Length: 193
Image (tube, rainbow, N blue to C red):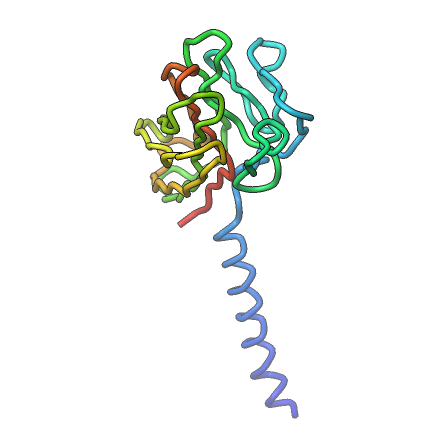
């Protein structure tokens, strides 16, 4: 029995460390990635400096974003995750809208960013749009899925990056004509690779 305990204990300890190490390895790094907190009854326009930090964990820039309860705003639609999302094509000032968050990273480490991009033809929009991304000094653009009706369509986008600083800023924005395009963003996630 002593031999079994002596052999089993190190094996069990190694298994526990391996499992806990993998849990930390794949841990979510984004705060409020589905924009659920604090919530909004219908459609909240976040376009002033006083509203810049309204969405927990995020800060708006340019002309802000439209923060919406998707089903309440577009009756035939749902969010990619939960009930809330943001529209980066904020129509208030016509100069683009954006949202960003700082996450702690390890210089030289690789990470995977995933997010849901969405669109709709609701209120005579074209049904297509662009989501711009800047992370770790790199800028790229993603097309939203093409909507053929009012119901919002979603598509998962993925982008891998290497951290260049101990704190990395994720910035999403759209600078298209907001009266012609939507650029819905939801379910933002960053995990270590």
